[in-house]
Amino acid sequence: MNRHLAAAVLLLSLTAPLPARTWKQAASGKTIEADLVKVEAGKVHLKMADGRTGVVEILSLSLEDQEFLASVEKGGGAVSAAATGGWPAFRGPNADGISPDTGLLEEWPSSGPEKVWTFENAGMGYSGFSVVEGKLYTMGTRDEDVTVVAVDVATGKEVWAQAISKDNKEGYASGWGHGPRSTPTYSEGHVYALDPKGVLVCLDASTGKEVWKKHLVDDFKGQMGGWGFSESPLVDGGKLVVAPGGKEAGIVALDKKTGDVIWKATELQPGKAEYATIIATEINGTRQYIKLFESQLASVSAETGKLLWSSGWSGKTAVIPTPIVSGNEVYISSGYGVGCKLVRIDSENKATDVWENTVMKNHHGGVIKVGDHLYGFSDGGGLICQDWKTGEMVWNEKGQFFSKGSVHVADGHLYALNEGDGTLSLVEVSPDGFKQKGQFTLDPQSPNRHPQGKVWTHPLVIDGKLYLRDQEFIVAYNVKG
Image 1 (cartoon, helix red, strand yellow):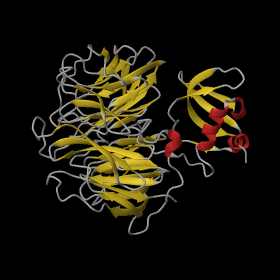
Image 2: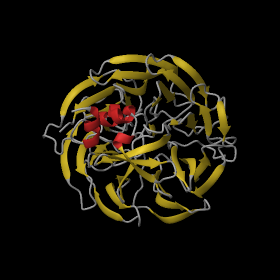
Image 3: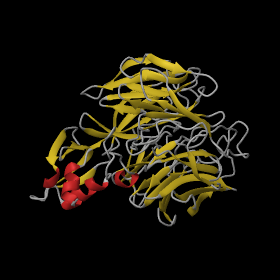
Image 4: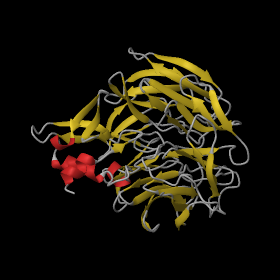
């Protein structure tokens, strides 16, 4: 089958658009930046920057575009990590915690899925995974060195390791376990990493060699939360965006190639940086960055750093979960008895609460939106399904394996990790009720984990592999159907 025909018959459906790329019309040479939504009946559906969806014939595109579409997956409708750019950041390319994988196991044997490899030197800490072009990137403290590590996903062997700072367990509360909490971010051949005390580095993704370094406290007068800096760096186009917190500039945008300051959000003076990761989105035609702090949910212009809108929040102790954006609505949640709420941004950038309650009190395991429903662990409530529009509980499951933990979604299933003992459950994503499809316990687990620490690294499924971590141990499983 030639590439034109292969592209013409390709059928692709996605739960979320792929990251934006430049598309070129063969006849005119005109280009446009757009997200790939789906390919159907020989036509490409593209989501433009203004939110509109355009439909064009595959054969009207450049040969490069046609070859890209043919590579997205040959048969079966699955989306490969190579085609999508993999999983370049915490919660993925769309910041939603939903894997693009399809065709996965719908049930697990009693022993769990097949173990592929175990990597035993990730270091101490709770850093998650970015997986791009055959490498897994994470962080950990080895002896006293905060270290960024690259692992070959095919073999589980170390590719390189680069120390970026010292971790003497001082300056941040390490009583629940020391080491980095942030997940490295990959972009265009570089890895960006943040340590607990504010060291921010750009490394060459091939070698681990340092390209540039900044410090959120020394350079921006930032103010860490009690457990240190924990957000994962955001890359948006040419910008690297982080939140130092403090009383001078709550968010800063740097040139991702050089580390030079592009702007500082000086109107935003939140105090503690807290722990939630910044997300990039577009509301009312304006590209913006949204961050949850202890006392406010705030948005700044991606172009200038100007404060666009904010909404008050009564966070306590630690505000951690990443906000979720759908259209002009933003959902947030916090633990320690606080709860959750849905905020709507009107056409004049005024933020109004739609509802607020304590159905979801998510500590740090994350919440994921699928359709019109939210899924996550709520303190005291176990695993929760919550209605996006009303905030009402749809169902919950609690007990030995569903008391508290983190969630990930892949191919219509929740991967629900119990933080207490590392038991992972496969649960059907459905508002119709709880339906378990498999369960097993992570093995090995670290004998060096702090007695008060838990299995807190979020699970990840990408390119047919499931990744779990407990401190120095990273384990890969085969979950292909």
